[in-house]
Image 1 (cartoon, protein in one colour):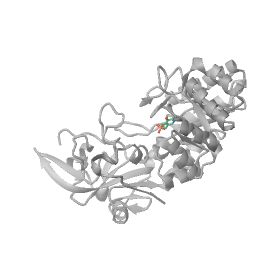
Image 2 (image 1 turned 120 degrees about the vertical axis):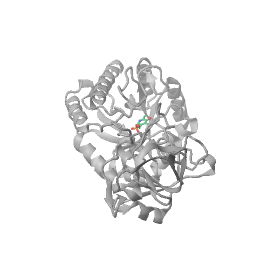
Image 3 (image 1 turned 180 degrees about the vertical axis):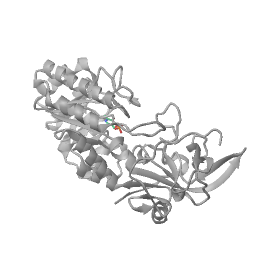
Image 4 (image 1 turned 90 degrees about the vertical axis):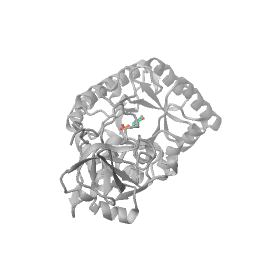
Length: 411
Ligand SMILES: *Cc1c(COP(=O)(O)O)cnc(C)c1O
């Protein structure tokens, strides 16, 4: 058993029934028999319990937004629209999807560093909040709105002068394509006000995939202080401040979940002792993977079992074209194993070291590298966990002519 590489922690909420992984009460083989393989399964019950627990931990007045780029699957999005206070979008395509899912214009805010004129026009016409990311973009929006004789709803996205420590993906602190530097903010807001547009406030997003409560708490405190400083400069209170998000989920061996109890307690203190200029401001956080990531599982059937130079490979009918992140090719420096299991041998002890690969003709198509697993044969089903966010939507489904996997929301 040399060269064993550990797998990430299997998230809570999954059970064993008849010796198999069961998701929302259905076994993996039942789900695959009914819907085919490969298959993304999202569990509605897990979405509910996640958001309930988050709301219980956070200050009651805090709004929770869903950043839909994590998972835009229509039935899941419709469910999320019911569960959260806002939907954060990042393209015209997502605008259409959010509206189709039943989100109200007042619930939607539109960020993104490169919004085309047609996307801005659609957002203005729909009446959603646009997060302005540069002085140029501000000019473009105001010109389009003036031409259409519509009043746009505009927030300013600020590139914070700090970052989210320990975050997997930094989106603030230093030179960035997101938002505008602090120095440009006051003049841009003034322009918005002078044009008679509806200034909604600030959007300040410092990073993603942080697991340390202390880092999130520090960033939230810095964000509130920055919003207050900017509001003082402008001389007007923002109606709304989006504090960003960054709550991560455990993907890899040794990762521990965010202690949301600590984050919530600290934020309650912060919001109960706000600078005067923010006393009537509505605060929100925006989360993607934290809300949906652990509620999804990717199931893929083993279609070959082979050995090469003494090593065992389980070849599946899925792969990186559906689960790019699990293959380590979506923004990771060192490849590590996602949580994975043989879903149809879920109650069996580990017995051998295998590499689980996809069906694509590239060595990059590796779903689990030298993992200890129960003995699996052709026909068994592999489960890759943490597939609810940046799975189907963030993978090159058309690579090698494979096409997308089926997705279902159950429960
Ligand atoms: C991607 C993104 C999110 C969601 O990030 P997660 O890590 O999935 O929570 C939130 N806000 C903005 C602005 C984003 O670009």
